[in-house]
Image 1 (cartoon, rainbow, N blue to C red):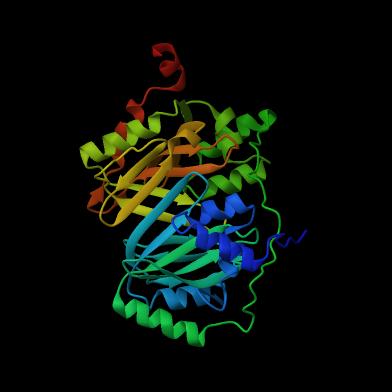
Image 2 (cartoon, rainbow, N blue to C red):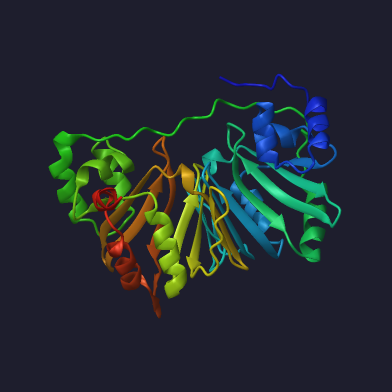
Amino acid sequence: MAQRNSISPADIRAQHLENPKTRERDLAAKLGISEAALVAAHCGDLATRIDPHPDHVMGLATKLGEVMALTRNESCVHEKVGVYDNYHPGGHAAMVLTDDIDLRIFPTHWKHAFLVEKHTDEQMRRNVQVFDAAGDAVHKIFVRTPEGHAVWENYREIGALDDQSQTITTTPRVPPETPKADAANVDILRKEWARMTDTHQFMRLTSKLKMNRLGAYRIAGAPLVRPLATDAVNDALTAVARQGIEVMIFTGNRGCIQIHSGPIETLRPMGPWQNVMDPRFNLHLRADHVAEVWAVEKPTKRGMAVSLEAFDGQGALIFQIFGVGKEGRDHRAAWADVVNALPGLAQKETVG
């Protein structure tokens, strides 16, 4: 059912002015509205509606030069500095494939998009923001160069939609799917899992068996999966940073998955957050949201793909980590050693 806000655009803007240092996402939650509604209330001034389809957004992004790309979910924020290029459109899934900006895009969830600017004491900040049907952020692109600002301003003139209304219609947020497993099919699951030749075959397998990712993990058992304590996430990140191992960190939502490939260097915990604070890659993880962690092995033509996967209390995937396996930069064995050294959940409980 479509929803509109009970608070007026004028009241939203007033609240925004009264809380200039509050993050937009947090202010929207405080007001009981979506983040997209908060942005839409500024149309005609600080925000401009544009076509949300990835073909249009990426057409702009590839002209902005060096930017910061941001994709997040409720528990993790993934930020990469780079240049958008090598865009591959697609009806079900699209991709951006560069060393720095590496995205998997699901166009059906790109429902609203805006050019947004924010005045600060230091500078004018400009970005592109994309939201899903519930008004939750799918992907954001932050301009970093003078040339990018000029392109952004020009697109505001030529790419603005006729509809610049300050209200937005959203649909209720779809809750994460609860873990689904079928113990009667566990032998088939294990047999077909062991025959896989590509990690992408896993979701097709679980769907065929009327399961999902977390449900399958809970019943598959060793050697395919191993449950770990929640602090295994921090142990793994610490080992990766200390040993200089290159990893692939996948973070996403229904509309976009963003991937970092390379090392991590600087870990800075702060309260409930564990942060990677590198010059061109930042990760902000709510460690207290991590409810389940699994070490997972999936066979591929290039050998075993070993991942560390974290889920929140509702069963939603927070992130996945794999070892980088590119030619000349094959860190898969070193990453597998890190994962294999992590104590299992029962071991942690015994020690604790």
